[in-house]
Length: 175
Picture 1 (cartoon, one colour):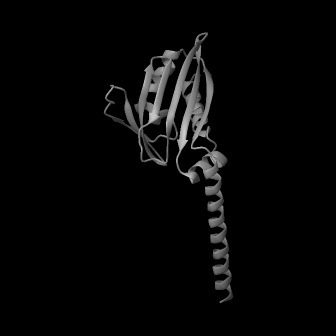
Picture 2 (tube, helix red, strand yellow):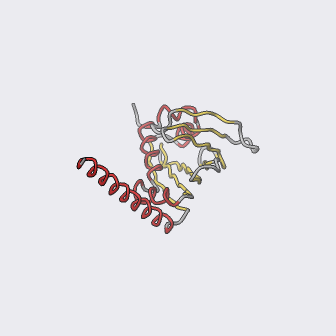
Picture 3 (cartoon, one colour):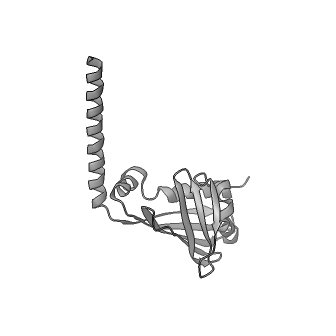
């Protein structure tokens, strides 16, 4: 019987600790702004047009982006711009092209109002010698305080951009 009391007590202590941690994360998240801006860049050996093709061929994302398991093309926006749904281990997200100036500027945005986050990614390709420089700017919004705290303190707001750039660098590297 002593073992049962000890186990029950340990569970109670762990539950209380977990509740306190969640409460602290919620409080921290409430103090953080909903909006954030993060980004990164990459120098590539390929010209802007070649990189543009990779950035806009959404059906091939699963071949080079480890966080995307499949993509479903959706009907275009009223303006005729592309829409698609990306599926991965954390669920799915609908995206749409908001601006497209091939091969130099692309703005995509999350088009799912039911998610706990939203925002846009702006891709700018600048020719440099025979290659180009890609700059990605994320203008994100995290609506729920707990997600804001995790994004800010655990994963970092720029983590998705850096994972994307690492995958693209691998995809564009010479074979």
